[in-house]
Length: 538
Image (cartoon, rainbow, N blue to C red; front, side, top):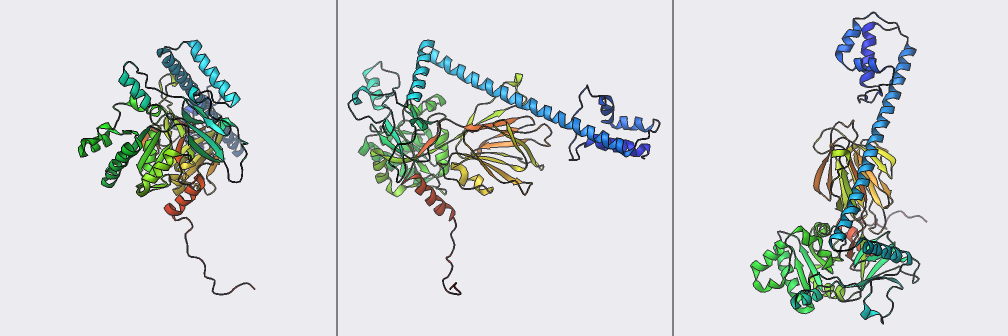
C-alpha cells in the first residue's frame, strides 16, 4: 500500500513518462474516461490539490493496470499523430504534381498549342514507348541504315525559334542540336536482349525509365557543333588551359563555345580575340541551355562536375571531365592530352556512364492550407539530414514507399546515389557501389545502436524522412553539401530518383574508370605483399 504522497508522486511520474523512455506523453482523447484526471495531473497545482484530499487505498495491481492503460493511450495518440503527418505529406505531394502538370499545360497553351495538339503529342509519345521505335527522324536520313536496331537515336533539330532575318536563320542552323544513338553492350554478349525503353530518347535529350547494367555507348549521328566549357574558379593554371582549349576548339574544330559569365570576363580581360565566345545573362537562358549545347567540358575536380550537373534542371548533355582538382572519381581524362581526348570524343563512339540524380522535396508542416511545398532540389551525390549545432541526437522517422523503415537516433542520415557512394556515405561506413548499379544508399551517421547497418534500396522507391513532433530539436538538410535547410518538427523530406540522368564520358569503360578511381583516389586495399620466406604448408 502507498501513502498519499507516494501515490501522487507516482502518478505524476507515470504521466510525465508513461512509456518509460524519457519522453512526455501526448494529451489523451476527450472520449477517454480518465481525460479529466489526466488533464489535472499535468500540472503541479493538480498534484497539490490531490495531496489535500482524503487518502485512497489502491493495490499494486491497480497501479499496474492504470500504467498499462496510459501506455496504450499514448501509443494510440502517437499513431494518430503519425497518420496525420503522413496524410499531410501525401496531400502536399499530390498537390505539387497537380500544380506542375497544370503549369506545363499553361506553358503549352501560351506557346499557341491547342489542347488537341497537346493530347496528340502525349499520345504520340505513348505510342513511341509502346513500340520501342523513335519517332523523331530527319527526312534527309531516311535512306541511311536503321539506327534503331541495336540502340536509340534521334535526328530532331532544335532551333532557337527566331527566323525573322537571314542572320538569325544562319545562327539557328549553327546552333542545331547534334543527334546521336545510344546502344548497350556487354563483353562476350553480342545479342540485343534488352528492351529499348531502358534508355529512351525524348526531344534530343537522354532520359531513363530504368537503367541497364550493361555498358552504354554513344555514337554521334551528326557532328557536335556547340560546347559548354565550365571551369574550377580561382585557379591560374585552369584559366590558362581554358583559353588554350577554347582557341583550339574554335580554330581546329570550328565549334561554337559557351562559357559562364565569370569565365567570359576572364577571357575578355586577357584578349579581345575571345569575342566569339557566348554566355548567358539570366536564369531563363540557363534553363534553355540543353537545347543548344551538345557537349559539356569541365576543367576541375568532382566539385566542378557537380556544379555542371546542377546547371541543368532537366536534360543534361554528355559531360567530358578533365582532372584538375584534388578528387577524381568522376574525372577520368587528363588535361595534358585534351586534344587527343576531345578529337576522339567528337568523332565517337564513346562509352558513357548514366549517373542518376535524386529529386528531393521539402514538405513543411506549417505550410499555408497544408498544401504549399518548396521547389525540388536535384542532387548527384547525396542529401544529408543531420542534427546541426544541436547537442541532442537527431530523431528521424524513415518510410520507404509508405512502409515504416526505422527511427534514426544519432548524428543523422545520408541518402546517396551510387555515384555518391565514394563521397560522404563512404566516410560514414557505407559501401562503395559501382555507379551503374541501380539503387539508393541508406547510411546512418554515428547511430546510437550497434545493430544499425547501412542499406541499399532499389532506385524506384520513394523515401520519406520526417522529423517527429516529439523531437527535442530540429534537423538540417544539405544537398550535395549546399543549400542547407532547416527541418522543424512535422516537416518531411521526400526523395526519389529524378527522370534525367547525368551522362559522363568514360576514358575506357565504366567499370575500368571506377576501379582505377578507387585505386588512385583512395589507395584501396594497398598494402605490402606478404613475404614468401618463412614456414610453408607442405
